[in-house]
Length: 471
Image 1 (spheres, rainbow, N blue to C red):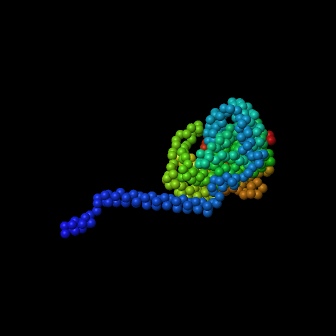
Image 2: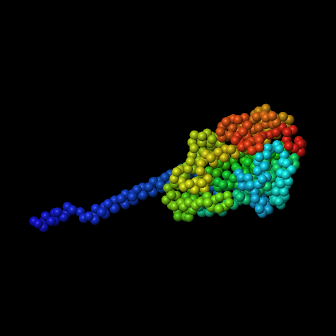
Image 3: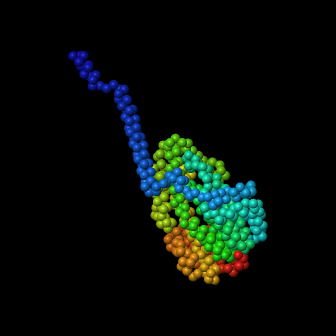
């Protein structure tokens, strides 16, 4: 009986090691199931984001975009001509980067009213700078007849860190042509000034349909010196009808380009390829590079972080692409009520490197460029009307259909562009991002004023810097 009692008693007790093991194994199993569930959810979201992109925008991957780029014969390729001009530029010419001022001459020109001629010291410096680059100028001016371009891009496996040296190589040629346009305008040869203005426009167009954000972003920046040089040329004298018609046609072609859509598609393709690269085990150091070319900061993105943000980032960019497919006026209206931002789990440097700190800010720059182009197109049409009729039109509708197919709309509010007679000419303008009609008063018509409202001003012939008739 004693032995039986002992056996019964022992069967009701569990060794302590079993309870200890259970306390350890159970959380591990729970964590394992949770991790498996998390990875399954990420994979499902990733596949859903890919399927969404395939459905909404077939051919969206980087390889597809590259394969779809237009082939351009060498003889018509503005990119090759720009690179050739760049090789003829003198060492140490130090052109300003877009959006910055690095020389005293550029500073003065940016704050000089278009109608005001250069003073003696400015003219001396202008000719000195052009003299230094005289070997490159004939080659650079040939770009005026080349509205298409394509650079060769050697893609890195991660896409985002692909070197884009051709972007910087275009800067000195841009500055050279800008100075050349100003020189011809000062001499009263406005048709020749417009040749250099067309070449300036074609520098931006030389980036074509690149599947990269930075060159197409710079394309909008190169637009400003081209249009401002055109405005100054027409403030200094008179151009011929044929020269005006030619540059109006080129401006209209540029205005029709869906640059925002091309840029956002390129960004999505590059981000997707980069994250796929990291998730496959590729090196994932990303960083911001200063204007001097030195790396300021690096951030390591591991596989887990890459997969954790991939689906959400791709869905975000899918939404951006769908908005970019709309006409500019509808884009503005949509973004006024729907400000898209990158998901919170996207590493900051990845968003900054990809250029997607804020789609609304990115779109705003392209909307301003579109408005700038449309104002310039209408201004040229107005100038052509005045040449033919001897007076300014009373309304922009008078330009249709001979000089315009229709009056372009203001991308900021969808209304026709504004037109106002001034005491010494006319001004074509938009309401700007603030959507307030200031009568064109906030367009830069005095030295140093910001371009709050986007616009283009024309002066009465007798007010222009050079005598009429110098064609």
